[in-house]
Length: 315
Image (tube, rainbow, N blue to C red):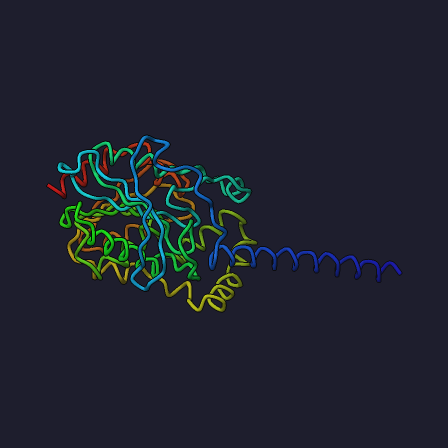
């Protein structure tokens, strides 16, 4: 009887572990394929900024939603800056208000503060939601920059239709997958005069370090199952997403890289590889801190390096 009870207990324990593991694999796969959306929690008007609600198609026709914030003095505008947000965010950034944020140690990222700083210096600003995020249309899976580059190209095409901007002075600031989208987009356009890539990463490198930091060895053990589920459902192999291959054809557009030195999710080595692969790569600017979000917060708190960079490149 004792032996049978032990077997039953072990079976229950094994089933519990398998069930928890399966739930974790399903949860992380869902976040990678079609993540839950963060609603918009404010608008530019709350910071005293005039803006237009805009919609435009990505280059592959996915509907995208955003805001166009005109320069304060239109005839003296210094240029136009597109802000491309990160994974699981929306055009405003990341509210970091759920349980996952508490577990992972993420902090709020308020892109509207950067938009305000740019607009104060008399830039037009275009903020928009990437596909599968915010108020833009669904088109799973998330490809960590590859298909999202079509969104950035769509934003550029939209700006070309506006008579109130200088087409020769368009810049981009990309965060996380927005930075990856920038690297994928550069070989396909000559409309970007200068750009800043904040915390870009190769998807497989990011997934490995993210799993290790959040769950330790169990996370690494589950990662192959997450990758398999992602490729099966999404039709894309995570290991095949290589922004460095695209960046090599980016031309001479100046691209300033920004990376936190002790990033537990990204990698200094990976960012250096991306920067070296990009013909116009500059930096990186290294930011103190051991969290992936530190590089994002750096430009929010210190917009001057971005302002100086665009002023220099735009002349």
